[in-house]
Length: 234
Image (tube, rainbow, N blue to C red; front, side, top):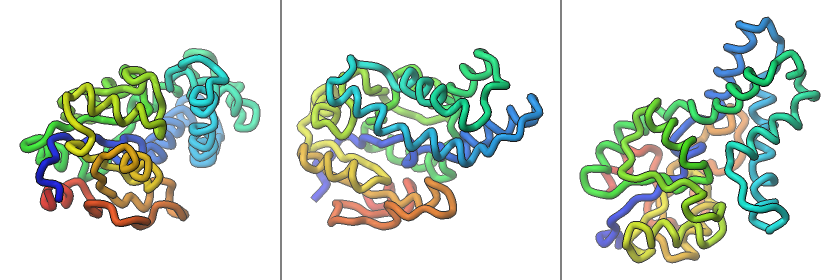
């Protein structure tokens, strides 16, 4: 039963926003303005592939707490030679790195969040840092009640404290919170912490050839294909 759920906590990258198409869009603007010939879809995929390894250095204690903006920029610098980014100056690279602040929502995201906000506290539970999530929300119109960036907990998902801190900061038991995500692994970690779970299928997060998270892989509390459907279910 989910009748005692008071707060919905949302994964952001891939669940709320279409990061891949947005990064490609940002890159193509640079291609046009700087007369570049960069395969931005390939770069977006390579950049995202460095996401988990970069955070794992923080999770493992190999390096001190570092926000995602810094990790993203370090990853971008490592890809510079492979993708021919040498023609871009520091200002261009800084602007490109902040593409993650300007990601577009999926078509159902804003409508669904507004519907859900009428009954529940809604907040991102993301590995993004606060400034990134604030800027994204302002641009995309994401109507969060509160923004819980990763540095608030000082932990990156799927570390348990990332989920438990969110519930604690909202004054709720974990069972009163529902994790909403398009990634089965995120929901596994949330459920182990006592949160309820909702899987939202995003079959094009990784583009037309996506092979992961195409369906629910466990008996999650709710399984839907959009935030509007989630609002109807709850």
